[in-house]
Image (tube, rainbow, N blue to C red; front, side, top):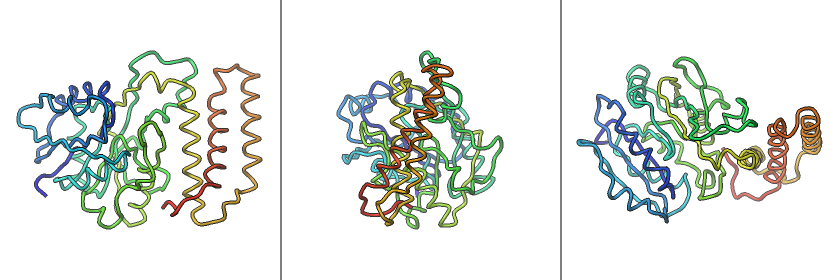
Length: 307
């Protein structure tokens, strides 16, 4: 290792979003220890390579840009792990703005608790108007996350960090493996789950995972995500991946209780519509999509089960 921290940003065809992310980064208060900034261009076919080549970096920053030709967010993150020179690797996304204290907050956590892995708070930042159907309970599906109000250890399998704001010791992948390339976004395919799978492997291996609300990332929301279809598709894919993970090598015959769950979910959509109109039905529609995705996932083929 040649430095304490590698801040890694993976990007794919976001030449329209990336300039603001990069222009906001110089607002960061820099850590005491040595660090580097690593950008992984994941098979971009737009003007991203040219944008990165001509971007003016702040004086004194150690910046490297590498290209990963194999499409997929997990492939890009695995390339970042292979390239990282820091003891810790810390990830953010290409449509986020880091709070000025973000990196220093992680450094304080590392100094105080020597975590193996860690995650931080994500706030939603709307760049345009918020539609009337977008209720607070749905913001988590846009990336909003606040596990604990104070620094705490994460121990439950259901309280993982999110992929837009997390980090870990670079060498622990030698024990648990890297990100599952079958999971994670691939171009327009919005399949996720790779960070949850990675987090659960961390816990199963006995690694200590910590949370800090002080390391804040602001997820900037694009207009395309303020569409009902985005939430429905996201829930469908979540159900599909959860079913694949839980089934493992078991029979592809789906559980009989799924029929009842789908039926009850459809009935809930109808009741919400009758009571309050279309603006009140999205959460119920998402439940239908989840169970349909679960059914499809359970009956699909997979060469190996998820962890």
